[in-house]
Length: 457
Image 1 (spheres, helix red, strand yellow):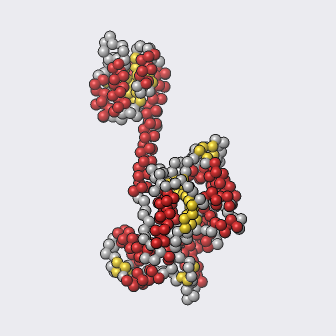
Image 2 (image 1 turned 120 degrees about the horizontal axis):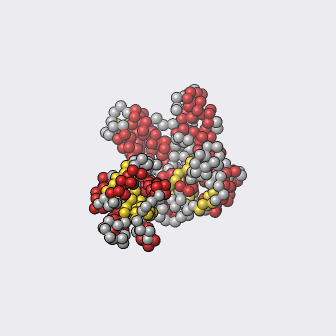
Image 3 (image 1 turned 90 degrees about the vertical axis):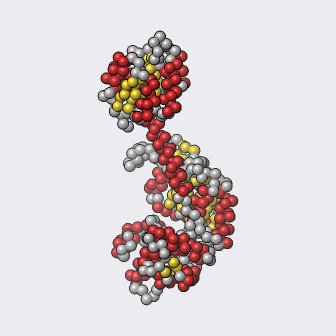
């Protein structure tokens, strides 16, 4: 912390001189005034962390009332500023009244230099700490407001989507645990955010955790936190995602990717509603709304012994299944128009339109990557467009068969097929190399090597 600024107010010039001499080398700035009527003016000029304030200014008056009056004035104008009262009269009642009125501490004339320095430094640090706390609170408030203002809206009017949103509205009013399932790219995180936004917890934050991206060695530290020295790199205390989400919503994405041996640790926290940081033995209560999501069939994983049945029951009080984009009819065009406006604005091509033939192509396509694939297709078309009209050939779509499986073009070489599969996996898991590698059945390092080979980085 910085040394800080101090304002000294005393009608005794010798006291001002002595205090200025003592404190000037210890602090950034020391201002001395003998007239308390100058206090408000000085507070407006400089951010003071401490005011050393005499309790009596009139000759022969020792009640301390003047000091209490100016103490109130200072705390009203600058509530975070510490005030230490100075008096030559060691009256306990005066000291108690000053402390009750908001003074930080009390020193007597004549003072001991060492004790006075300790008192002043402690008061300055207290003021700085108050300022930091208030700054953090303001940042937290601004962050929450930013999350609310930047909320992405769920787009579409199909009966399938309306059925989901009606269930979301009912569930959001409760604190019950929710499991959101659906194919990759269907908007599971958007549904989680909508549940949070419509809940009584919407003044707090939603903390999102990609369970597939957390390494097993860091699982407990990331979710439950750790204390300094808990392991080699634990250089300071750190709150986990559960503590951060306290009083808000915790969204555990890709819950189906959590290894079996870690599921019991998650279950224990959900049952007890308390976490113990790694390296500590002190449990901390947590109050969260839990929303989980996965694209995997959890009941099937339970039968295979890969997912705990008791954990499934714990997270699955309400189940929301998101329909794939291919089952949402005209929502494809509604979403396409939304993404067209978004990327036309981003790339300064505001006149772009999608012609009827291209719209027909979008409606007939099976969208194995769902909304995420549609968004990427629109962005690519906008970037590569040479005219203001987007035609069918402007959309590069993968040939597909069935409901959610891609069919490879047999005219392609083996290398081209490999590149297409890798590109599709990366599209399905944007920013999540671990999940993309798992889909392809290869290691992360192998995927990195192939990305470099095919220039897909």
